[in-house]
Image (cartoon, rainbow, N blue to C red; front, side, top):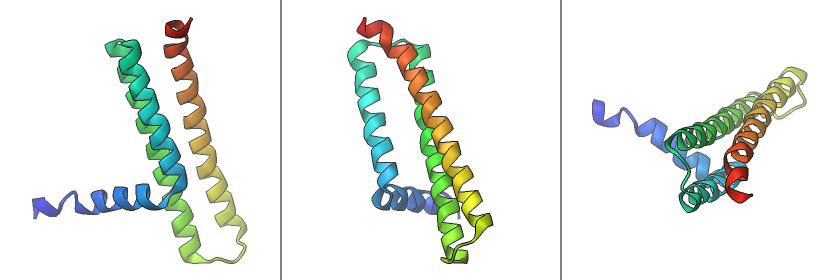
Length: 113
């Protein structure tokens, strides 16, 4: 039973990265940031902040995608409550992305200048 414990989660991640354009964009940016981290030799604490930021953005994007899929499964017709839920979830991704960008600037700007 335990060998199938992670299977739904892994399937979800595969589907997420294969089918969602925004997930692909986020992962490309994440890879670029990780490469920059190695190039600049960021500290352990900076790595922790970078990895937490990447995780936060990817997790919020996955939750946003889930909310969008659920809303679409309920109805494809205009529904104000579903639209609000989708917009709020997209806003959560925006918040996470802005915070991640600020953390990235705070970490990498001193190495650049």
